[in-house]
Image 1 (cartoon, helix red, strand yellow):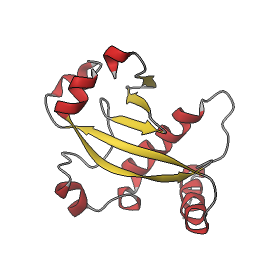
Image 2 (cartoon, helix red, strand yellow):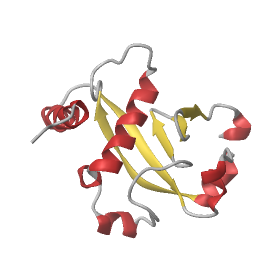
Image 3 (spheres, rainbow, N blue to C red):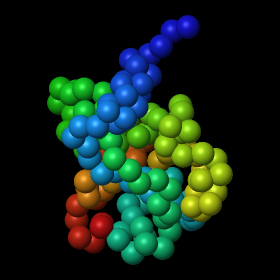
Length: 137
């Protein structure tokens, strides 16, 4: 069986989280409706309150898969959350927990938001958009 570097880092995450150490608070906000977030609409703070559901909140180790040159810390965490929800979401939540929290889809997708230590990052087709403008959260 071939194990990718990202899968190896997911295992490292689980081990480090269990043994303790420096952690960062993270959240996942999934859009419910409307589907305009799939087409590139950038949500405002009001949109996040109305159209999004917090499907997960927890702590991650200080470096979920080690430093990546040229990648900002918050984007690294968001990318890890994207990877996990698209390959092994049960690491974060069960299908039942997702339904109980009002989540409409398992895998993180375009339009969803990762929050890392209070910094909101919108998932785009090929990147992340930091939502730091007060009118955009």
